[in-house]
Image 1 (tube, rainbow over the protein chains, first blue to last red):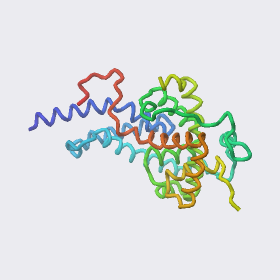
Image 2 (image 1 turned 90 degrees about the vertical axis):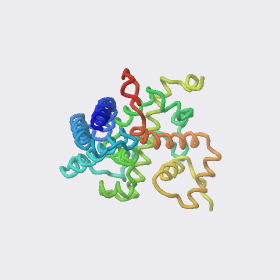
Image 3 (image 1 turned 120 degrees about the vertical axis):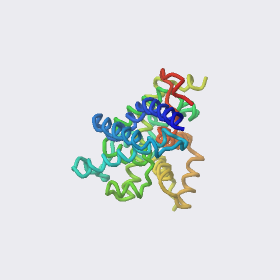
Image 4 (image 1 turned 90 degrees about the horizontal axis):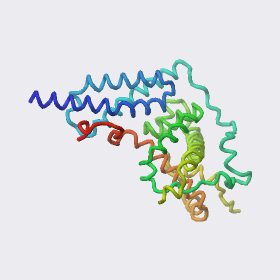
Length: 202
Length: 73
């Protein structure tokens, strides 16, 4: 029925508008330049509207739209790479931010010892956590953030990341290790300081 | 000579575990270390959480910041 279809389409347009802010923050974390992120989202939204018939009532509309955005982001990243905008990654260099977390012996520095973040579901439900997460992602050095995003936001395998970036798989593991250590330290400072464990566990 | 794995090396394996399959030896060393080290158990949980966090973006309903109920199913 035509009327029902139009109604469905309208409902989907409303959902597009509702999901837009999340699309933008997702794209920003990866492309880093707000204008580029806006472009990718704009293109993804246009494609979603254009291909609305393709969606045809499958479940997970937002997931479908995110899937489109992921392709747009990959395109934008490839263009950045072609234009030589990527800094080379030097994995021989020491990473001070990580050296600071450990003693010479390989034990944690006392001040850097990881603490309990509590129940993951409660953490994910906490808006403050996501603000800190975003801030800490943006604080990552660009080339580390890129690999982390490809892996954890885009869900690429390290083998595919190698293809996209020209890195060796070993380098990927080194970078991901650094990214995770930096992120955990940053989030712990930002999240637990304002949102103490005791408060979360109440 | 058995070299006891230190926390820094343990975090390397905790991270690698999320991207590749560890060897039997690596798995054993990691499990052994985690059994003894609470700070590393926390770190391991945090890495897991970061791993899940990235997948949260695209499978959640829109946040309800002031949106009206008509946009929801």
